[in-house]
Length: 197
Image (tube, rainbow, N blue to C red):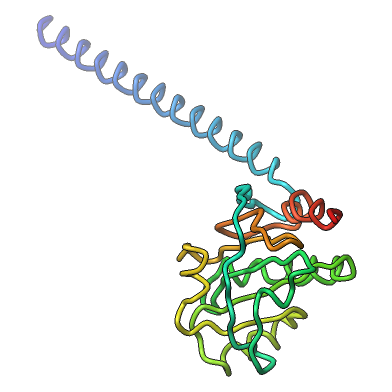
């Protein structure tokens, strides 16, 4: 009888130990998860105004020769804007980060056009009517070109969308981005180029 009682006590003791271990493990998991979520909340509170943006690479090479049809009609060339600071933005109507940055680009253009700033937005492959509808919807105030054959992507050797290149007044490519651009990044990197002679 005492052997059975002893076994039952040992079994009950093991069950209690297993329950205690399970509770402790559960509490440990909760503590870890709380720490992870607190860390994520702290990280997202440090997001710059306007969201994340890729930082541009500083480059230095002559702007490529590029001549394409404009949505407004006729052809335009990058050399038409040689006396301006030009941001060439390769994009597509179907590209989510391209759509996301368009209002930012339009606002920056409106604020800096009087300083000799120009944007040439080169749409990668969609037909004229579709691109015109996009331009109207987003009320784009700058030049929009059609690029059905991917000439701009080839000229800049970058097939990722969106990508942007800043050309100074002398026709030298100075900055390049791959990915969405925020207003903070434009002000930090492009605005100083506007002040250069």
